[in-house]
Length: 279
Image 1 (tube, rainbow, N blue to C red):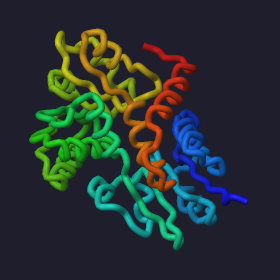
Image 2 (image 1 turned 60 degrees about the vertical axis):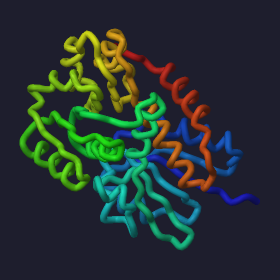
Image 3 (image 1 turned 60 degrees about the horizontal axis):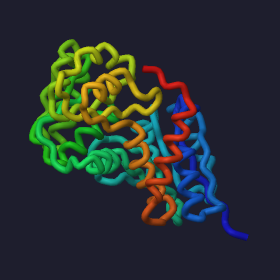
């Protein structure tokens, strides 16, 4: 009998996650009929216990908030990419029982931008701070951005983003969220905040906007993304990021390359179309 292999996405809350749709689609397309992928509501307090209860049928885990940094001290090893931003969104279980931490958000962002023909980046603006914002800085650094302006709330967040820039060899200037409307004039804007945080900016989208990368996928479109598209600007959405980071997760967990990106995106889009999409 074929060996059963298991994977799942962890986070809290987690019911909204599209990851099961994407990974299960990949398994079907790749003929991995004994593979399963589920979701589990796990917070920081329960994470260590959950990891300790897994057997050797587990191949890997996807992690979302609030676990991307909480998992770091619980792992046997962490890749340089993940360590550079102190954020792990993928855990692999090796044949010898070790745990490896990876970050597929960074290459996922890069792939999503390249898919739209963006291979090099000049000045960019980042809205927000935190693990996803740090991954955005790493992606921008890898794409040659000389300088990034991060719009954040509070001096502590500003100092944190500046430190990430130093670690990544990227000049990061910070500005108060009160001035976030200025970010919309940048050639590339990456929004890593909840939808409600950027609703107030939607009416201020310039007449000829550049590129907006909004990492949210539900609700979609966000008010900011809707206004951006209405003005004729290019929008890279959270589904693009989710698909590309999941593609790399599937490849890491299964050892099968390439993962079926087009089938995964189509499945994700169908799932989103079935949800209410406020504007």
